[in-house]
Amino acid sequence: MIISGGGTAGHIHPAVAIAEQFVDVYPDAEVLFVGAKGKMEMKKIPEYGYKIKGLWISGIQRRLTLSNLLFPVKLIASMFGAARSISEFKPDVVVGTGGFASGPLVKVAAMKKIPTLIQEQNSVAGLTNKWLARTVDTVCVAYKNMDKYFPKQKIRNTGNPLRRSIGKDLTASNVARKELAMNEGQATLLVVGGSLGSQRINELIADKLEFFKHQKVQVLWQCGAIYYERYEHLADDVVRVKDYIDNMNQAYSAADIIISRAGAIAVSELCQVGKPVIFIPSPNVAEDHQYKNARSIEDERAAIVLRENELDAFESVFSKLLNDKHHQEELSRSIKSMARTDAAEKIVKELQNIMQ
Image 1: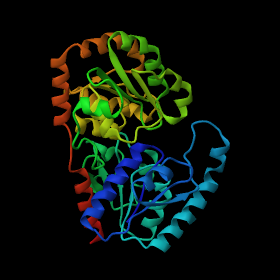
Image 2: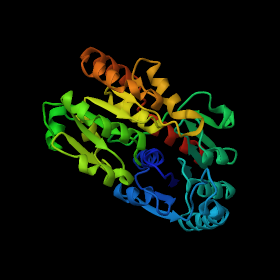
Image 3: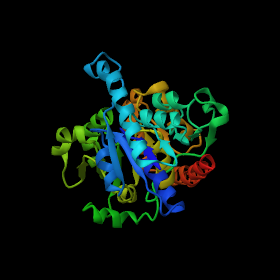
């Protein structure tokens, strides 16, 4: 199998989850990842033990840039690079989970009549997957009503695949805090603004550190690599500032309350984890899909959603949740009930179907 997905953890982690399940079903299988040169998948995928090749490709910016002018050249070059990888590796099946590199790879595979499948994480389809939809064999989705983006006969609602480790065998909160050199008995807030970080959430947390300290709350804060130098000086004995958290299970275990963006994979992971969540969806995404992702959870009384233009109410909302253990337990129970744990298994069954 060749599998491609990258740019953010939201594309990388589903790809890893599918690869894990594929190797379980086919223990002798060879798996090759294809990513975009210079993007985070080129570093992260080898950490999972898989080989990866990079294509010279990037997305289209919303403003006129040199990168946009180079896009046609990059696309042609990446199509040739994808064709070379496919000819050398000779895959039985090719999978795309979104991101720049998956476009040329899956398109070339489909042109060569190799079985192809794409997986869309969000309630609003990404540009790459929309471009690929009519040429692939199967489209796996996690939300209803996706036939507005994809041919209805190709759609399979499988849910979002999660890495094996996520939400499994969570340790006791005090144990995880001890491992993180945090105060074992103190209420703990985990902040994750997506794998690349969130400027607005970072600004909020930096502004509220004294408030958290007054509330006797310690903070484990993933701010993102590009923001780390700006915020690392704020770390102290009750605030841990991280550019990226590799061991998310440990972080989830330590947390009493989680603040998060609402990308589809983040939402799916947090359902599996089953902790009280305040979602702050990004407004800077296509068709406001992060808000729609978050609302689908809030509508089941399983999370709290605060839009960026509602953050004046943050202290009131947070204090109320912090001091209401019954509400915390209700949110935990409800969000956990929404977890879908068999998505990777269903997707690999679809791969088996198209390989026959």
